[in-house]
Length: 272
Image (cartoon, rainbow, N blue to C red; front, top):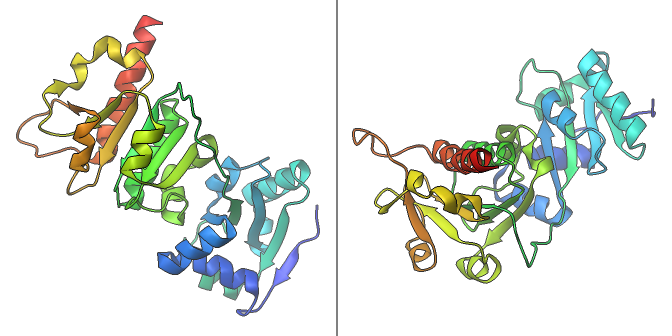
């Protein structure tokens, strides 16, 4: 196994960088953008990036290194990508860094991939318009990956796609997705030529009446948890509603995403 490097000081630059990225906020967002790096905690997320050259650093402790699941991650990653750096943190430092309690101690640093948005897209797209809750954003990404989508567009006002909370909620889906961030309405108009369906409560078109239209590539838009989709989407998209009991005001945006994406998958499966 590759010889690990020890970190024993609060002043260590790597420790300070990882701590800032884990804490979140504007400072973390700027650092993530400047460095093109994200951090994720937990054995499951580490396992999901095994074999990727985008996994550039592994951080754990001496006690963590003897745990079978962490040892397996470290051994396999270093065997497949020898350039991956391994760092062993002092136990006291680890407690100042991680908030996962008694979970197996492992943090990974991921290089955020730069993705070009294709000019002639022929696959479905998920557009998040100001979805602010990190758990919702991560859940929607996980659902998209499960439904076979690759392309995700996060518009301005959406929670940071590569923040630790979104990564945790997405449960490894990021590795299978091509994510764009910070888009404007004009970018959506210019770059997405597919039919666009925007979900809203008062739309006349019923999801389950779309039928054959769902066989063709299209884009879905889901909006902010409180205010919904930007009204300007109505000028170049088709409003779609999900039939539901009128006693309930609305569905969670993550649940609505799952219903729509898997309805399209069901239609295509029935006619394949």
